[in-house]
Length: 250
Figure 1 (tube, rainbow, N blue to C red):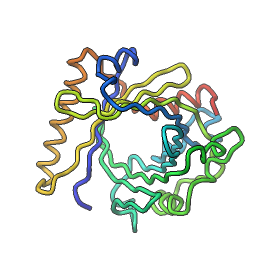
Figure 2: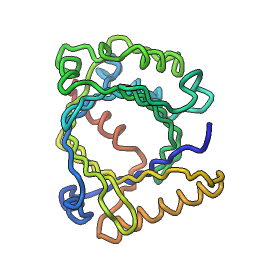
Figure 3: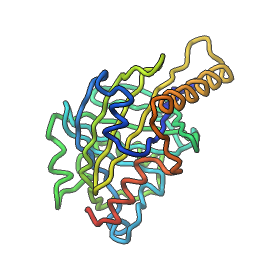
């Protein structure tokens, strides 16, 4: 596999509405969606997130256009990604991405297979009593069984909805930043992210150095606008899912 794109994320603490204003969210393109995650029901009933702990994410998004269902392995290894899943591909309505996921505390590999659906098509799967596993298609099922063969996907339960507001392409200095706010269970989370793609002439050292410089620029651009970065070691997905199972929002 060639050099992979890097998604760089920083989590933001404090008043989300104020942070969005300070970061210039009014200058971006806003989309509002609802998000659900699927989990193992027995674990969730005990306050655990068994799929997430196994490095598997099953996510549903609805609103602002087509629905989509994502199955993701994070963290994963290149050795896990076997057969057709060893490299990214697009085959409408499927998009398969492999990229590095960087935060302040970690750098991991992530592989995600997204399938788009008509608007509203996933609502039954995430409704109370619905079957979140039903819309997982044959290729997604193949991906999960080939690349995460020890993980079980029987009898899933949906957690959510999370109200998500995403603002794309916000200019911060010379960066184009995406902002995403999540609101659920009386909590709000905000994440700022950028994506760095390798250039044809890059070698691994050059590309890593450029991505590291962009990571520093992102953190500095946020701080310079009076917005505090989170010191929390966990990403927003884990924080939200842990909060949902603790609140019993199944």
